[in-house]
Length: 269
View: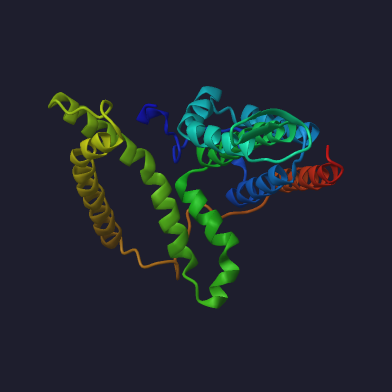
């Protein structure tokens, strides 16, 4: 897996319907999408969610290869989770039994649906960051969490931290790739040897990476102070968030899908 395969936090500028949606709409829609995924129970409901995801990708005009490339880093986690479900799911229909492992038909179904669920979950959340700029994502989070201000929770600061962390993921990945290339040019080997040897080989990579990350954080803090940043109180926005007809339509669509998937999942479909 190459570092360029990690696309989390990247933003693809565009003028599609998904790009023009209010960030609050996309946050709520993704939440409903995740709920519906966990309510899905069998082939019919998973097929419905796959159609919804494919439709969203098509409308967003985000390249499919970018989404598929972003799924590569979590492929190992998905396969590992599938193996756990395959070998440790009990059931009545035993297919294979050897040593301490038992593979049942229910385990095969659970393993398959678990992989599909993880992949669709990551792809749906990636689509949110691909079509929403960090500024709008911060404003949307702050607006949705604004009721918590009554509990004296610094919502604006928390939203800003989350947005900055998400925004700097591609930057740190690019920095890591540059450092790895420089270390390889000096004879470093990150791929051969056992697990302990590979871990030791990462030390020359981690030290300059941490130094670079702290330097960028300090530069960002100085830049924010020079612009008189003082938190959320009294701040104005260049773009005021306002729901439009398309936002209500999208929210109604995802609400209906969630309810429908929940009903069909109740009947085991």
